[in-house]
Image (cartoon, rainbow, N blue to C red; front, top):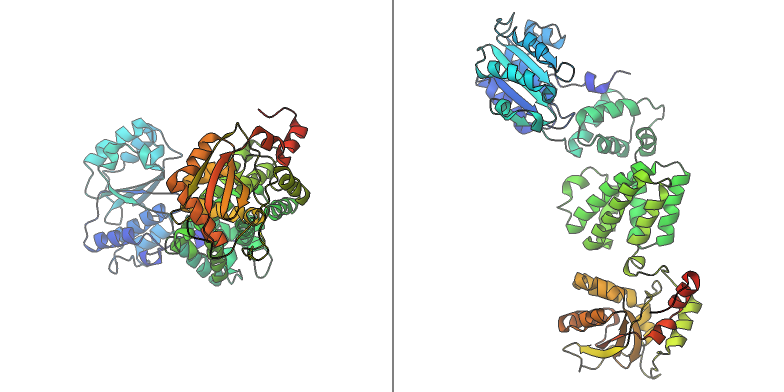
Length: 538
């Protein structure tokens, strides 16, 4: 099967996909017969630099041009299409970098064109020329004959001397949008009678990273499959990249804070032969779109266009379930994982660490245990002996089923309790009373609401736990005095009180204390840590 990027190379300006502003400028120049003596096309690989250079050369020497379009039938057009034109000299600077080769080429410049109006020199990968070659070229570029046109193409503009850049008309080519890539691939697939899913085409376009030539080459590679039709999963096996369905699967588990499920998901990917080194970069790209979508669908509009309707709805649903700050946090963890995987003998481990850190419960604590068993919770309640007595005639606050409350290894010297109340502390509870168990069951929600309103409280609250409830007064224990001072600040106490009001639907008074040594020693988490690691409470 021939390479698609050769077969479907544009033969006219109308065949060009993308780069509309550059195509329009060149067409106007050709129509007005104001072709410059030097052009510089710069941009990433596969964005059409050489193609545009050849189209410009063809149009400049076409004897039966229609507007700006070369006719493709005259002698000059046919000779250029077949690579036999004496008036088109293509020079690969990556292969011939030395000054002697450049001088040899420049010696032909004064010679008039053989059959066309212009003698056109295309210098590909121009940045590879040596300083001597540039110096030899500069004199000719300063005073070129009227029939000479130089077209330079480069992927590294910063390596081209400023003296050269200043004497050229410069055009910056950009990567192709996903939409343009998918449309071109779809047209090729129809002409080749290739049955391939839209998701598979999008995966190819994503792997091409904005390069049309790369996208067409990858389609040629995928087309060798005998599957009919070719699915996204088939394409992922050939390309070695991860399908959108797999990326969405992990994102969905992280958004629901399903730590065991997310870890099992990665283990399953590994066991099925997924390339985890390619999975993480793909997942980071997915998280980037999630981040943009969480700010607003308009922000991610260009990226969402490349997805099918189902994938788009799925991504927007996941984005809606995660705060923007949480997505940023997850991105940070997986960027670290991407770096650490390069030197890891266990590629799963950095990913698993990133998942654990991304878990809402684990990310808010410093201890090694995320969730105590129910018996340990009961032991902690008995040791602290802070369960409040609630009259039977007062209704309890409604509690939704949640993950176990955040537990904290905490304690320092006793400090005086500092009580902070909201401005409405004197208002009696309208939604009924609540107990310590109610607060513990909803503690994670309360923390999330408080840090959503004021992210600067995250560190102080990561060391906090509900200690006692008496009436509508809640005592919160922290590990360090400066955390107590932070939470006791009037504005921060108001934020915390509002979080309780939002989650428990009741007005509260808040007192913040620093845990004693004895309370710390009675904490099952501390006992467990001491038994495992040794040492003593200090």
